[in-house]
Image (cartoon, rainbow, N blue to C red; front, side):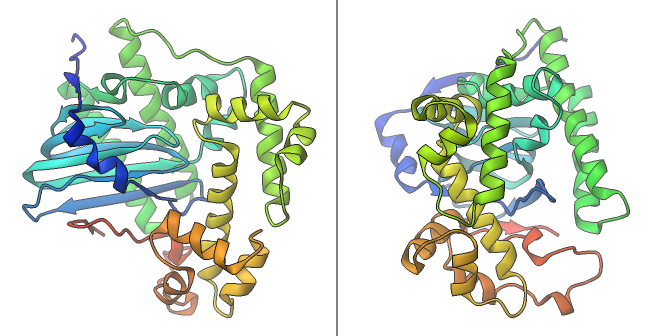
Length: 334
């Protein structure tokens, strides 16, 4: 079946208002739980654009509903069965006009694919998200048979994510890879070129930089420190993160610290001050500002809203994995 192209067009100036309200969103991801899922159901007939960007990769699958997707300076029509492939740092929004709207989204850290090796499939799959693209490349309209298979797989992921059976994390990784390979292989069958793979040296440097951040996030980190540890210049460091992950290294560091802080805030007996200091923030005011920027709420409010571990059902590993969203007209379906 031939590829069905998404009809994209530039947005008018009046339609760019949503960019001023884009919020930073940091899904509760960590090295030991690098994949997170969100299921959204919108029932209210209020077609107000909402926008976000995040320091991770996202696959959004439209189960039901129609509307316009806004990605940076373009927009395109979406309908049920469509996919949205969003890379780190890319602002995006939707405006709904047919309800109900239901969407399943998979968020994952780039390191999930980096672990496959610098010159292997992981590099090619990651480049599908991080290269500079038009909205027509970020929206995928699969034929009916592929849509059915894709929906079956992503629903299996949702079931594993919520019930946590033995081996659920390995199955999430396996099924995520299956989804990505299906997309790229189908695109290549339609004549689309494969994403360019960066040189081995670049990927090796990036892995060194990420490892340094993981080891030292609780201490002050400056560009000179990270560049020296990675054996590259500060200019090259900036370019490396921008071209490979799509976001500045400082934003990646902030999001990593926020994720660590959010995990600690879920634990009983942790004060907000202790969490701030152990997560690498040098002042409470900075911690509160950055935490609110990524989560939409203050650390103290976030901690109060978490259920104590002692009262959690046995199939939930940590309360942070359930997450909380602040979008209007949006409810999480469990």
